[in-house]
Image (cartoon, rainbow, N blue to C red; front, top):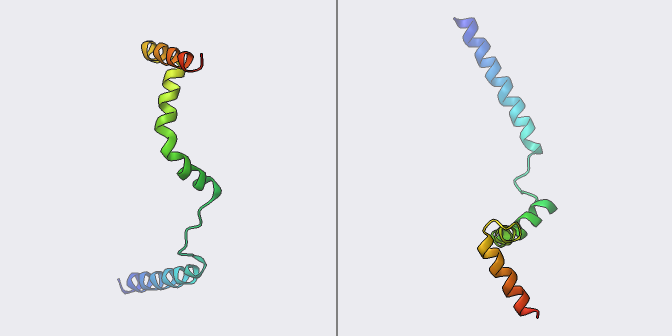
Length: 76
């Protein structure tokens, strides 16, 4: 029993030492990548793009026909 307890204490000591040693490389600042910046900027437009896609693929034909008519009237 004493040998197992001693081995466990030594393992804990080594793991604490190595984790302490590796903590020096960590940084507390999160650097935002260009991809994350673009995702955050475009996130607010996603619902509008999805609605436009639904009209363009004729998911609801009545709504798509109405949109086509409105666009034709506006640019005629």
